[in-house]
Amino acid sequence: MGVYNFKCSMKVYFGFSARKIQEHKGIYELIVDTVHDLGHEINYNWLPEALNAAKKNKFKNAQSFSKVMNSIAQADICVFDISVSTMALGLQISHALNSSKYTLVCKKLEKNQLSIEDMFIGGSRSGFLTLKDYDHKDLKKMISNFIEKNITKSKTRINLSLDSFLIDYINKISFLENKSKTEIIKQSIIERMENDPKYNTEI
Image 1 (cartoon, rainbow, N blue to C red):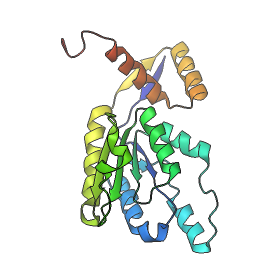
Image 2 (cartoon, helix red, strand yellow):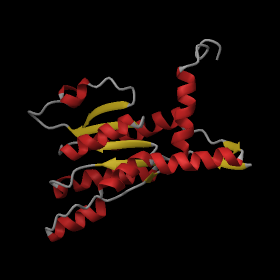
Image 3 (cartoon, rainbow, N blue to C red):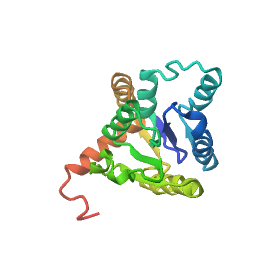
């Protein structure tokens, strides 16, 4: 018999573009600091690496595709700043939503620019997606509100005891599908809820 612990501290994936990084450095650092101040972690913080590359004017592929995708899969929630939008960010957002991650997509509100709601992504009807424009003074509050809202949805600490053959199976699926063990168990419960005619009627 094994015991799995589910903690309230969350893994947050933060995605942004390395283009114009010096211009947006303060904003990206504020997002990272806000996540840490709330007691959570950025599970793949490549911001220092990107800033170092910018100083040397040597932009390489600082992010490994597989590492980014794996970090999104392992994250509890995702935050993307698309103030500088790229195809890579679009791919990452799509992966996060397809992986049922509560996802905040935000952008700095600039004059004569479209609101995020009026952009292509604004047509999404995903229940996992939150879209926000921001200015610098309300950025920290926006990030804090998003995290607090979604930690209550999915992050209550429990101890789960499982037989060894179930743990072996979860470990196998985790490896084959590149998903966290928590995500596998969570998806199984969600699938049962979706197929349960009594859910929301008797509970």
